[in-house]
Picture 1 (tube, helix red, strand yellow):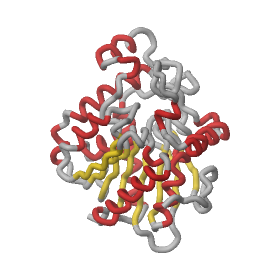
Picture 2: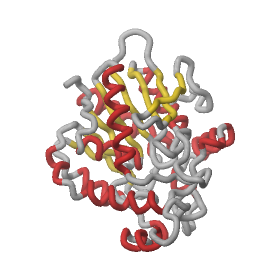
Picture 3: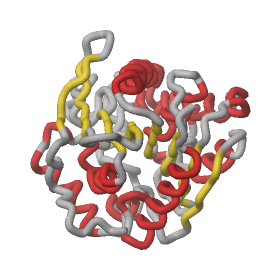
Length: 312
């Protein structure tokens, strides 16, 4: 299943990188890859904190080859969608509801402009925001896929929500919460936290070197505080039990960045969800792992799409 011939370091022919304007005038960088002829359906794929859609071109190519149109956008204040603070590379947000507002409007336009059935996929923070958006009825696709969803945090710096609020409330909460990009004060390298595949990890570094302005560094304290709040509130939302969009959740049980136990407990509340677990063979970025892991993940998604991605 590995797409060996695909160039992971080039925007595919027929795809376009453009800008989508939110209702408040903010510009988000977006990606669209339609299919020629009759489409099987449409996929909206949303990455995690600080991600850029280029990281997932290999997976996009697989689904595009099966007839799916592919769309994505970089979240507000991250990747190629600019910054919301004076710190040039800091990922800041005042309220996760701002992400949901963008998601709601973008998804509405996307569903109106693309052929069904419609599938929304989200990785990490994107998985959290997709599930929150579904629960809050910001979008109603025909199916959804959550990949290593951020439904609980692996307490950076050993912090809990209360301590994050105390520390982040001192001074400017838009300042970076720490200096490094991912989990601070750990003996794990960034690469080992993300993937066991050295070549795919180097792809990300290549895209960063090509477009240094798209690199998102550490989150702001306000992002950390709001991430705790948003994940906690979603875990406790009673609407999880009535959210009837079919869901496939891929969970990396050895994930060093998000809390897999919280993800398993949250997804278990959904009335129509299938869970696929990965062990120590997978780090956080399941779709960018070694072929054995990635192929299993892609295969599970394909089976799910075949069985459950039907137009409502």
